[in-house]
Image (tube, rainbow, N blue to C red):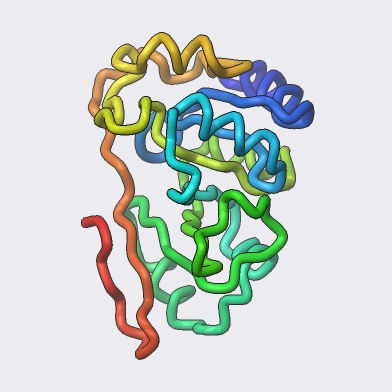
Length: 188
């Protein structure tokens, strides 16, 4: 079904390249979240302010501990019980490219449930950057056909799988746990 796309993506990601791929939310521009040069290419392609961090996708919940110093266990209980794709801002990011980490040391991460993303990230063995496939300042495209040609031509591989989806996608919810362990919704 999407095995050829997975293989092509892995070759591009291993070489430090960029992919345009369907996620559990909107189409994303992705790269190896541990490769600073690849992350810089995304900032340039999107004309994005480098002070704005990007979301990281992980395949499994236990991977959170490898990339953050997350000590609050409440977050793990919370993410197990949600169905809508939800990005959580974690404190004390580590083992990631420094240009995906916010100035305060935090990083937004989401555990994917989408089978394509899960298989790709698991096969790659590292987290992927996932930023919406738009030029900075423009709305995130809700369908593949709405993605700017500059983005399509600026990546090294465009996934074929799900290009014909006709149901508009929506960005993830974004939350953070405050110092009291309470959930703060940053984007519903």
